[in-house]
Image (cartoon, rainbow, N blue to C red):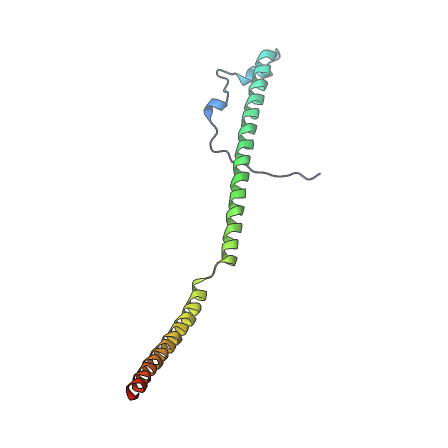
Length: 130
């Protein structure tokens, strides 16, 4: 049988959740005359404290599990964004291509303007010669 070792550190145990028996003489437990009421009180207190700590550990475990799920969701969202979105380097190359295409369009536009101007001039010459 394998024993699982879980080390838990509780830092926020509320004092109101822990019962402390005051004026307790533990040596009285070991006298020849046993005080079963005292023993019963101590055992009851220990069991109540154990239940309180168990509930607190379970609550902290739930919080931890929820935080772990949130972290996993954030990790998967980050990976998804890395896969689905373009990087700045990709935009630099695309920007260079767009600038090059815009320059060519401007050159073509200038040539078209020159051709239209030349066509208009030739139309005027033709109409003036007639």
